[in-house]
Amino acid sequence: MPQEFDYLLIDISNSFTKIVPSNAESLGDKIISIPTNEINERCLKDLSWNSDYSDFGVILSSVVPKLNDEVESVFGKERILEVSNSVHIGCEIDYPDPRSIGADRLANVAAAVSLYGEPAVIVDFGTAVTFDVISSEKSYIGGVIAPGLTSMTDYMFDHTALLPRIDLDEPSSIIGKSTEDAMLSGAVIGYRCLVKEIISSCSCPSLDAHLVVPLLFVYPLVSILLGFLSVIYFMRLSSTGCPRLDLKEAFAA
Image 1 (cartoon, one colour):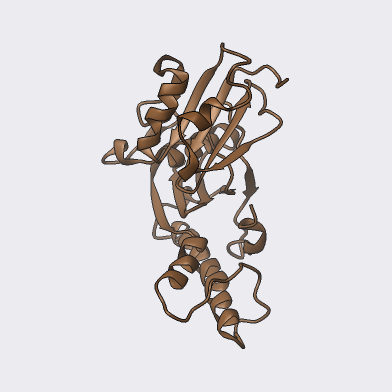
Image 2 (image 1 turned 90 degrees about the vertical axis):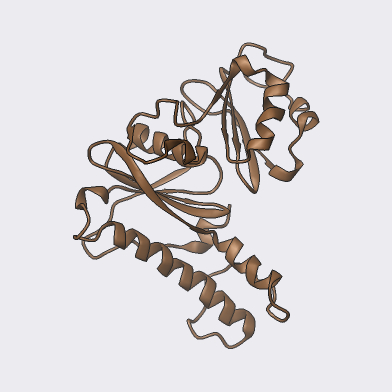
């Protein structure tokens, strides 16, 4: 029998949907991860806890709007709290069109403010990599969106005649001695530079320096607000620059 819980947390991203029961203090024992293209009403109804407890709320963070109706059909609109700009996330939103901010980014901001405070830069590695900035005035002020590492390598494979699909790993040398090694160097080392340069630009003295630290890396699995204790790694920028990123670890999830 599953343990009793107060919330069912559902994070629908472009690639995977993560689902886990939670109470106010902690997550359940197991996070269920399902390819998002397999999510439908029957799939949600088959969840093992769906019939065991009826008195729980559903917190939904979704970047695939067409699936929101499936969730609503199974659990009922009255018990669902959908992450959006209309939900208080613990800080102000200084953004021209708050409705256009993805629920995943708002959830990350809520988690960062709740767990670590401000100022902060949140880096979330997923189908895309997002950088979101919280100012020292406790205000979300925007960010950066770049292609995810897997998206970049898949694009080369899908749109060229001869380049192979590669498995991500730390390259042995910057200078590749084969097509695969050269692609690996370009992907991993190039991506590392992309991430470090964006973070470095956020900390440029010409910008407001109070936007920079702490730096939060939110690795791929889950980041939902209101009790969803995200998989988060916390680092501070050192005086010598950004910390080295181990992409083999970062993208292993």
